[in-house]
Image 1 (spheres, rainbow, N blue to C red):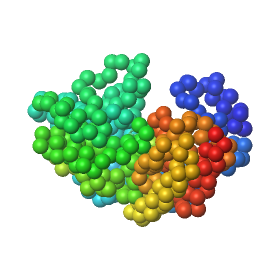
Image 2: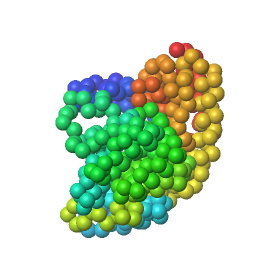
Image 3: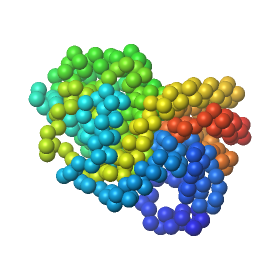
Image 4: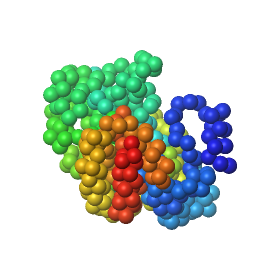
Length: 393
Ligand SMILES: Cc1ncc(COP(=O)(O)O)c(C=O)c1O
């Protein structure tokens, strides 16, 4: 089928909840994907920060083949499976956490974290969660409620009770909201969908201190910024601020749906049998791919640290050449953004015509979240295309 035929079929059958670009992706190799018409694109979107190993990774193939040969793709959580157990052990080793709950998505991982936070708080009769403006935590009711952006709430009221919003990177605004009912704080250490906004070190340290002083749980949502993307296995490791709960998803399942809630110390034994579950949590095939990613994470993170600095340099060069269109460069590692005064969608369309996939974040930011295998040559090529696209606008 052609791009056009697939898009027409989608038009008749899909709900209209996405503003999609007019290509259907068919295959991929390394940093490149091909659409149904056979056109090739250098991919700096990675399925929105998912495809960390790019496309067609040989170790991922072998892992999936071994699952297929064993013939069991799903076991349920009535029984154990070795892939999920190993993936949990690897996550705990890399993050320094104590226990893991597996689910299928970032939103679900956050639901688990919120439930743990409220159960922990319930011992003292506390339930309020503090979240942040410009945050994004997913689309289930708990997750959209803690998402501090009005546009995601519009038309879906009422939200979950007991959630309040502070200003990001403003510790005083957090202090002003804490009272005897506060159970937890949830924050992305590097905000993604809100526009690629890094947390300040002093702010994140301050959150940790406030949680310690008030016996509240600190939840870091690393669904987008975790798993090597910021040059360390987890983003919090750049700051030396350890949360009580950490949520992960996106890259975790190597492109198959997988989420995880990692618990540290006092948060680790809050869930007891019957408290929470997910039928597909720890799915055999997804966990087998997670094992591949996690085994490569230490070396991948190192590469992202070096190449991410190069990406920053190239983006700063672009900003210097186009001061009328670029108002800032933000981010870390392979999660960076150009703040634009022109429409990101126009830049994205021009880049796509020139064979580069990039996406947006917030209303004004052009987002770069390539596979973690992107090289200096890939960055040079992407930067040249973005520069050309901006010149033409
Ligand atoms: C920080 C963050 N949390 C949660 C989510 C939701 O993840 P999912 O779409 O897998 O539910 C996202 C998705 O973009 C995200 O960026």
